[in-house]
Image (tube, rainbow, N blue to C red):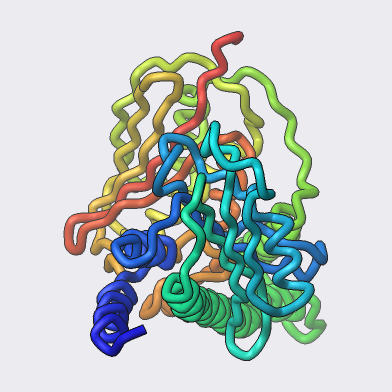
Length: 395
């Protein structure tokens, strides 16, 4: 291979590796190199360590027969031989079979694929009907294998970094959750212990009104503690897919109004505006969907205090949509993708009590109904939660 060819090929790879997606980069690489090295099909086989075999990681038909998907099986035996022996393998049609249907006369070239220092698979090229691979073509194929391995290694490093970031974020969330849950548990327990101890004191007599006040506080804090424990248990059951659902035909517009009525009994000053279109029934668990609606009301009350809540329902094609909107401060865009993660709480809102489980529970319940939940928010204007549930045409 002359120096000018090598420089040109190197320039191609430098341009290709600027692309972020590894498959897009490989597409560009192989397409660019076909000017110097013609082939019809190309496939990359990578070793599956668990299955102890080869998987097709990438395959393209770029020449004859390119209107169909590349048939990776054309090179599977050669790929296995390359992996077994660790060297380049050429396979040509048997002598005397030339002529006739070129698609039935594959010339195969298998090149070892080293990712890092380990042999991980093979790069396969297919030419239908020839010509034979020249020495220059074999050298270019070796370079393509090296560059393909570099792109795959970059992809795997990016995935590893992403997974590490995800694990580290989850660990931070769990650490925050432990700290938060300790506080959330101690607070109601402190009230219950304090007021019950006061009522049991022998050296003090409490009048009936004071006793009633103390008992009311104990009752409310016990409810709060029960809700906290139920959320933790339910979160665990949802994560392990062991929570049971009881599905039946439900009118979501009627259900959300019933939930709003209950919420108003505890928050009589809360203003709720309804824009409820009649909805067809959906197949749902009324108790669990009520829990979702209650969580979204509670979320708006905590994070947008004093704001009215606007609830809308509408029928769309093959689904119904329920939205909950407030006119609060809004949520920065950077935090929106994480709102439904388990234990996640928006930074800077530590003064508001919560465990980071409510929205996670909402999402898991909606997903169990084959629905979708998402959020949109604008700073200083408010936040809207959307729920789409599929309509069952048989109901």
